[in-house]
Length: 261
Image (cartoon, rainbow, N blue to C red; front, side, top):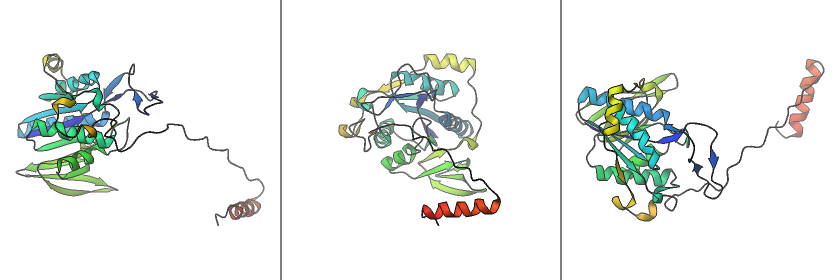
């Protein structure tokens, strides 16, 4: 099998700053890690390789320091790594990110399965996985909690719903987004860490990809962050005094004054 795992490097803190002009995250000087849910995607890709054989390719888009995230993926057991890094990609929303990743995957070539984490901690939209599948024209299954089987040209998957789960079959190639219930990510061995330092991380810029240049980065984004601000503080509540009957009468009166009943 040829498995592509899409990962992202995210800030390792909630104390992030927003660029007031672009509305994008300021990542300089902030410690970064592999997006936590992407660790489950990496682990699942490696488990499938161990069971069925094949190759696991890690793919990420970000600034040059995102190479560290890809080296961590290599240390965990991925075989190849590609980084999409160019100032032309900066400021991309989920729409432009999906398009850029799709152009890179088309250049990488044949694949059987694409695995993504459900969402990222910095964006929290869960849109890139489905958007990427749409750009590639392949089926996708989100919220996958278990890969039951991959046989021939079909993947059988479990999706948790309420207090049960549903079984879904999807033709290959397809894309899935996984939840943290799917596995327990491993830790890299010292030997793999040392090997990962020497492995190549291929870096592609906008000139290496085909497609419409106007669809990359901030220019190709369908959405823009206009303003970022905290929600206004909630006003203090009002305590009702008196016995239960008078409290009930007061509450009903106030609800009627506000046309809530």
